[in-house]
Each structure stands twice: as C-alpha cells, then as structure tokens.
Amino acid sequence: MCLAVPGKILEITGDDPLFKMGRVSFSGVVREVSLAYVPEAQVGDYAVVHAGFALSVLDEVAATETLATLAEMESFAGG
Image 1 (spheres, one colour):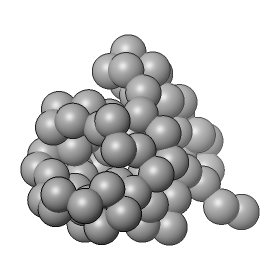
Image 2: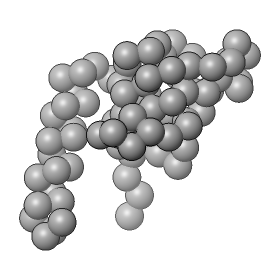
Image 3: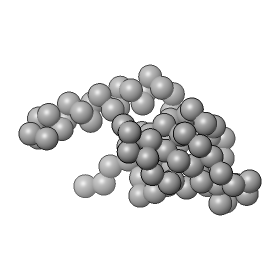
Image 4: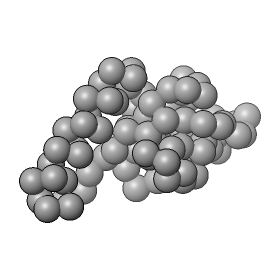
C-alpha cells in the first residue's frame, strides 16, 4: 500500500519551477522533496508528499488531523 504523508516545508531552493526543491519535515525527519507539482508552495506550508514529490499543499489544521489519524492507525497496528 502506498501512502502520501503531510510534512512541513522548512526551506525552498531553486528558481526554476520544474527544479524547485524543498526541505520538508515529517515529525522531525527531514527529507529533500521535489516541489515541481506545487509551485505555489511557501516555507511554512504543509504539503502532501508521496515518493519524494509534493502533490498538494494543505492547511495546518488538515495536516494536523491527518497526522493524528496516522498516529492512531499506527497504535492499532501495534507500532
């Protein structure tokens, strides 16, 4: 099963929209992510990320709710 996870954009590099990258924090784990699909993304935004690509930008409330749901699912799985 594949899962897209929200993360907070900490830093953005690159001027060309096709090569725009971001440092994104997933509950403290920071990864480099392509922002080519979300040229409107800004530092401080939350983005839904799958396979190293940000697919959409979402607000903090939606991101927090999604992260809480994922944490709840993990607790049911014994994680």
